[in-house]
Length: 139
Image 1 (cartoon, rainbow, N blue to C red):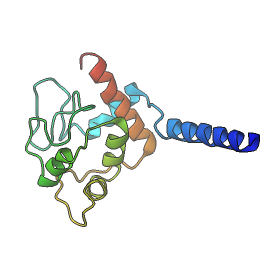
Image 2 (image 1 turned 180 degrees about the horizontal axis):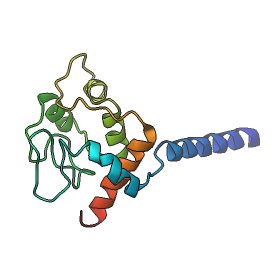
Image 3 (image 1 turned 90 degrees about the vertical axis):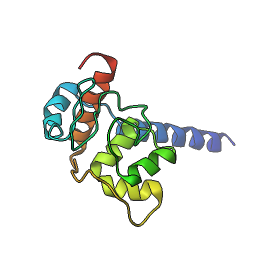
Image 4 (image 1 turned 180 degrees about the vertical axis):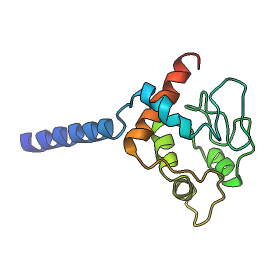
């Protein structure tokens, strides 16, 4: 009995550490520099949009496909199905946007406007930290 409780506790601790390590906050200062790759399509200035992508200021907690932008039908469907942007979902999305939407919608084909992929895990963590820092204060 004691061995089972110990094993359960260790598994819970392992799960907690794995989740914590998987989404370790990045460096917002470095993230601002990495975000330069995103600036061609995205803005983080209040009230400002770009023709190629939505404004990312305040993205966390936002329902997907609802900002002042003309989203793909698949992104709108994902939002209607309950997708809300979190650091974890943004991380998965910017890794491979099309694959993320396919998985989210459980669909073999999706329409998606974002084709850029940010493959480097540290870069993604840093960009997410930068975007999170903008939510807490002024851009």
